[in-house]
Image 1 (cartoon, rainbow, N blue to C red):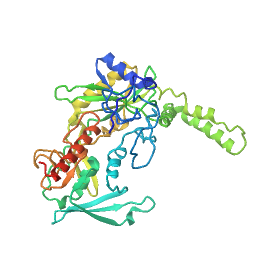
Image 2 (image 1 turned 180 degrees about the horizontal axis):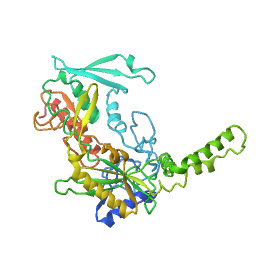
Image 3 (image 1 turned 180 degrees about the vertical axis):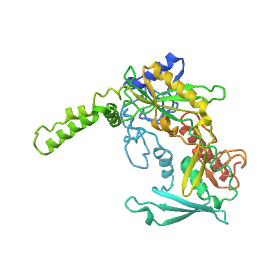
Image 4 (image 1 turned 90 degrees about the vertical axis):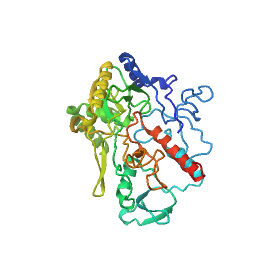
Length: 429
């Protein structure tokens, strides 16, 4: 995955104001601050040890070609991070080290066939011991209703459709696996996620410059309440326009009307001046709100008490935020302290503020691991109890929150499971 730390010690990376603000806030509050491992390429060559990068032979390079001697499955050129804040809406430069650029590209080079736009519908274990899988190949230009179901058979079936996807597939095909654990669907967790905002800080934060995440403040466990991380967030420049346009709502209709009038006159040829730069600037406003505000992304150890179930053909999740009340109280209190240290207002996202709903980027659980089927759905290698050859190797197998961003932990578990499958096939116990 080529994990790397944000190179804050070198230009232009040392000019990311949100990173410096988080570091200063942590120092003033006597909190632990760190630069976490990121699956983002800041250097042209792979980094063997994120703790000891080579700044001489492999220094950070802004928007420079990523060296890939073997290429990738897309056949696309990639470049290092250009600090545009687009990580959360899709990196257009190939700077994020997503699985298609590493594991899947390597698998394809070794002969694996990747069938994109394919949706698994059903699977069962036949009397021969093999798995029969029915799936639909979607065509973006045709209705999915007319897609015919295809069938493949396999000696081994590995589910890696994510927490919701893998759990949903096992729930919808539960009848074919009557001995599957009653723990299926249990131990759901949002990994303690909470999206909040720092608004109108004294100092500029410029959240559009830099990757979405650069640094983290870590708070340890306290009593029964789990610990957590608070990370700086960012967003691309086009979202900053929306933030600033909406910041002064009372005057926005007047500014929008003026912009519309000016654009119409230009289109009709009544006004020969085709430069709308001033009007666009007036429409957006002073652009001070987005420059002095930013999201903060918190995550940690909430209570994995959620349960997923089927409601007709849809997946439902029952999870009560109040069961993690003490955890969220500490998390929010720390967010307010960070805001105060930066002279900013602290605000929740609307889903939490008005409905007590958690927005999570890190759903976990549903097919939890355990010592036996009374405790979990899979063993520590992701193999489903009572059904040899059936595996779950994604976030669904985690029986609780990880704390930090869980992608690297999930990848390590999946890699471990793959090693065990290979060794078992070769006769190694």
